[in-house]
Length: 288
Image (cartoon, rainbow, N blue to C red):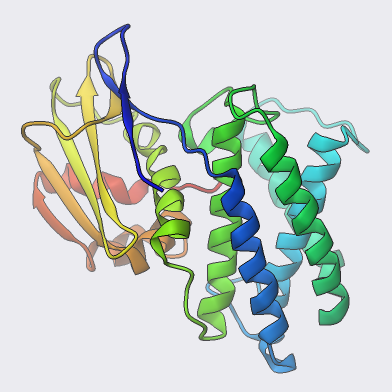
């Protein structure tokens, strides 16, 4: 999958093109099924880099969220009234639902869980592949600062969820990661859409630019530029004031809270304005 850009005729600034990755969810989930089938009984209880979750808990979460999304969005099935007054209310709700789902599905035997996962993944793939990518999504991608989102972004967000949780399992059981460019680059590309939101409180002169380079087969370069009163993702500028280089094996852990910013800062390469570059490490591309 390659990245393209398009010019905005309204203000002359550059915006990245939509990430049309719905078919990739099927491929990532196929690898998940293969991975779960390969696990030995003891490996289901291996600790993951998510402190509260073992392998069986992450698998339970992936099953729960697939079924939950199909029920809520595809089937419009709501079983409780929820009052949302703030962004924190959303985080609290998601944390509660995640905890409840894991508590139920972690009890399943591997054989039962895998069979249910295969069914859920197939239906989830069909659902995302059938969506109009440019229609409004049921839920916004709030970690990118959006109040409303289009389906293509919500689907891309779903890809990052399926990918990074599977990666947690792979690390825990010492299996190779799914870091081929076809499947990992779109995840990184989606993470980068949260950069303007991560910089929203950072002031700088207009045209100040920051480069983020992810090193590795699936990596690439992204540029963030200050324009009037906000930050935007843009094409490569003539000059950057700060640059940060992150290995692809570390990048996903930073942006999903598996690696803290202080530890990550010791493992990245920075040039130019250090404080601006380090702000990249504050990007969190998960909700809860």
